[in-house]
Length: 444
Ligand code: GLC
Image 1 (cartoon, rainbow, N blue to C red):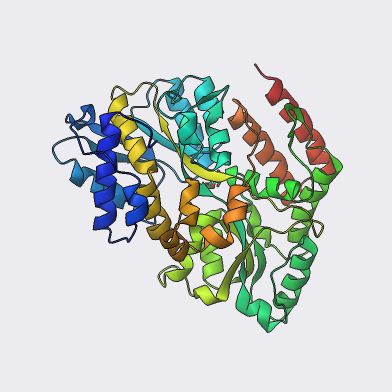
Image 2 (tube, rainbow, N blue to C red):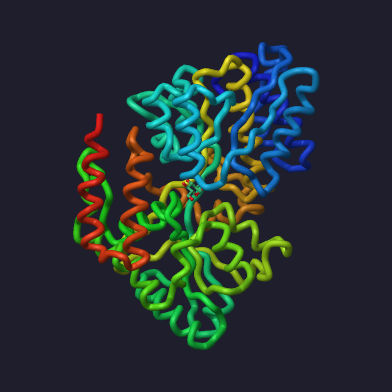
């Protein structure tokens, strides 16, 4: 967004620079890139409140950014946060109902990476193509930009990237003679069984298996990492989830539960249950998002130390296959009905700026969506995932992109849950899912 010439943007660059200095971060070089213009008064300075609808942020880094903005704009535009739900499926359900009823009052909506097509297709969020030109989009990781694009236009600004990794207990693997984390599901299972038999952990592998959006992410990874797919990557109107590899991948997911490597309670677990359990020292492996890596350094949330916890790419079915994470992360959307669009855009620019993302990455443990920050020494030092997890972050794969995502997600949750809980064999569930998804992608 550096190419923008409007005054709100210029002003925000000045504010962002002061914030970086106030935060005591030695980021002068990158922060300077945000400046180059003197602050000027702007339409965004009229006394206004911009409300931002966002799920809670336990890192505190979002509130820190907002407090700074409000301080810098005392007497002018202020940001107020309305708290949404953490469960992305429940949040999206509620939001869609409210958009349909025309009752969303927030100017900015922070939402999931899978929502843009549906929000855009219904006219609920603002087309940002004029404000966020291609030259600026190019500074962001391509996955987030693709996810926020619909029919040649862009409707959101990627705020942070979430990539899933295999968190593992380095100390326990070493104790049992393993020098590196597992690359395949078979290796993972062998290692887990050995450590479980030794009584060092209660659970071998933790995953998000409750019937919600998290299960879609976890199961999609089993599909991709077994060489299968949900939609044909060459033609997204073609459903391919009943293919042999996709079905085998989902069967492998179930097998981890059937073999006692993943707990039966996986079917009720979400992100938080998993990381609480893992950081309490109860499990050998955990699939979870990049955002939670920071928790290991905090004795309030972790009984472990950073030395005991490694992160690796997710395992694959056959050695040598490409490992993919689901592309996760949240985006900044502008309510198409906002009556304060200039000020709302000012806030979106501020929150997605280099300087703000740097704070989120260093203080909050979030992976940035701006590519340059992955080469920033301060970010690399404070957030090691920007180095060791960089490739996985850049190569994360999108869940199906469709304006009927909520229906597609429900169909996937249903089938993946039946498989994980052992209610249906994978072959039967993927046959049913094939039919259900075909209806969704053909819907007009
Ligand atoms: C995280 C991800 C989001 C995903 C959700 C699933 O919030 O950032 O993309 O949909 O987890 O639970």
